[in-house]
Amino acid sequence: MFDQQPTLELFFDQLGLDSSEQGIEQFIETHQLTMDIPLHEAAFWTKSQRDFIISHWKKDDEWAIVVDVLNEQLHTEHKLSGSCKI
Image 1 (tube, rainbow, N blue to C red):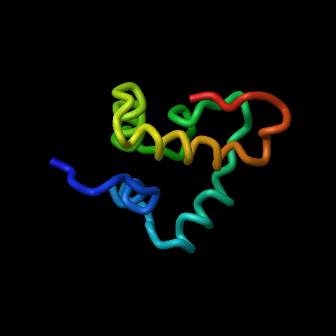
Image 2: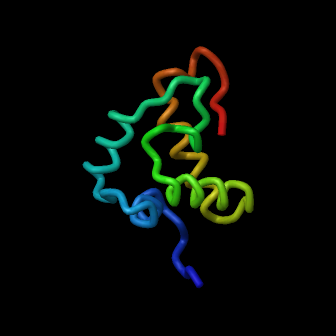
C-alpha cells in the first residue's frame, strides 16, 4: 500500500522519469501538448506509463489530483485557446 501523499515528484518516480525539480521542469517545457491531444494520448508515454495515468485518473484516487496538475502544466502554452482534455 502507498502511504505517502502523492506529489508530482513521486508521480514522476512512478513513471520512471527524472523526478528532480530540474528534470520535471525540463520535461514539462519539452513535452507541451496542443489542446486537441489528451494527456494520456501523448506520443511520448510508454504503454505502462499511459496505463498508470489512465488507471489513477479513472479511479479518481489520490493520484488523480497529480494527473490533473500534470495535464494542466503540459497544456499551459495552449490554455487560452480552449479547455484541456484528459
